[in-house]
Image: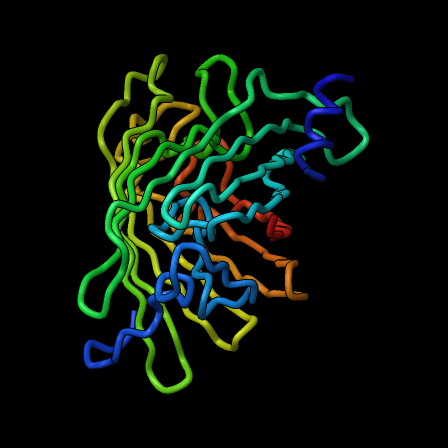
Length: 272
């Protein structure tokens, strides 16, 4: 019951080379004391693609709640807070079989995240952020002490936004070191690439390719060495509410399943 109350509280509480760079967010052009209160992909780029982070952070004095589903009826609730226009922290908790008629199998620990934007995006320079993300997704294998899709652990990521005519987009690249290597001993540093494409002011497509070099030992609970190709679509349903649909592992990079993982996510953004 305490775990159920905890997750309930969480639920409550690229592109043209000649294009002019435009997705330097409006909140970065204002002073730190001003807060941009319009939620759109033009002024608030995605902070996460599917599983991979971007260099974007929450505006100062804002917070969001996200709920996302994954394989085996798993559900994860996460909340993040923008303490500064370059710095955000968060925590998450969830479990498997939360959806359905079986008894929920809650994860053993709450996970935490932190992200700091070291360099802000300018007309010619990309944004660069460093951070830590302890939350993995999908099934949790107790015998291997890891999630189906490993958490990113410590990472560094760079992002650059562009705008051509009425289309805006972003390119993202990063490296990470996952800490979920105690059993499989696969502790390689890995790389990911991603992109987002704004179709309208309230509709966004995202895609990422994670080389998953720390998940290629070809065991019964690991990837096959092909990497993970994930895609998703995001829709700002209202000024504060975002709804998304994800397809993960499109290349079939798993020994324990041949089908892509499908998931929904709902994100609510608010300001203090």
